Image (cartoon, rainbow, N blue to C red; front, side, top):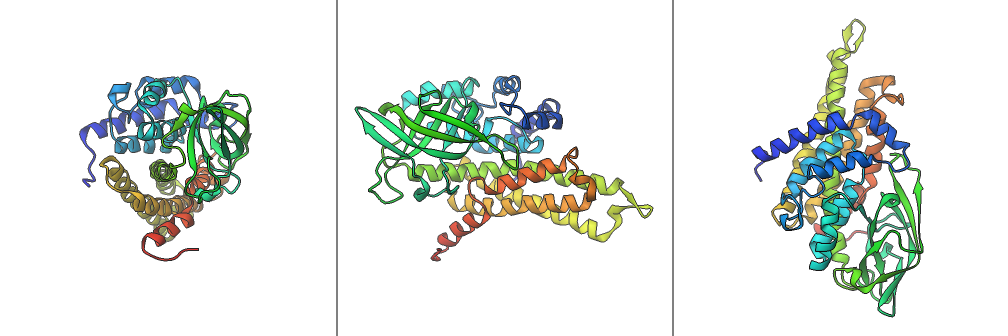
Length: 380
């Protein structure tokens, strides 16, 4: 891949950074941590008007027709400011799966709603184990007079409390092996029998427990093929992992920038602390992690954009970036000293989100096992 951004991509980066710097200060991020919705509806409509919610969708549905790499640039900028809102869940976990495997009728119905900012989507996948494996899907959907009835509990579902629709992953044949018998349903979030509870998380983001009790879904709301979508779910997870890494990259960049600026100005023993070799090494290690993360994340995003296989790259990227982000915020915290653990400092915002992002779409250990399998090893 050519590591240089095109002129159009540079314009996208600059315009996104300028807009988000103005519209999403840390005061808004902190306010949204305690807000019932967790996002600003006004800001949501503004980014929809900018075309961001439709950036990666085809023009025939009202989208921008841009690439996944373009979307990754936008996500990196969102990661820099810790953008609060249902963008990731709506676009990555809702819209792109519909674009990939939805019928034309489903695309025409739902994609314009996503692109216009009128509908919020999320994916109800993980359950009590918190794992991203086929065997962890226990929620059941049973055929009933042309409909399906879903029962089960989903956990750690992002933005479920404000979602208009869920893509619910459920088991429709429990006699098949774990990778078979799994189906995705488009579920109206207002359907009778759905209850949602916002969970307390370290990142103070809005993840929910969603309980489905005798929730009826029409057969035409099946997304993709009945009983045969686990391979598609894996692609959704892998692509979302790459996107999350691009978001994490933005956060790492800010932590590095504010650490370098601080150690050049902080005076101790009559000199800036940045003159000490240990502090310089901290900053160098942080830069190595940032640039390593950039290289692998952009390579993976480019592969998605160009239609190349990206399963291995997704696992390698998430395994690396999950650990790298935590190393960067840890060294940034050490370099700042005690001031960086105060609640009114920005560092704890990034520290908490780095820890939460580590587990999202599989932690480093999960993805290292994936890479080991691809190398031909037997993994327990």
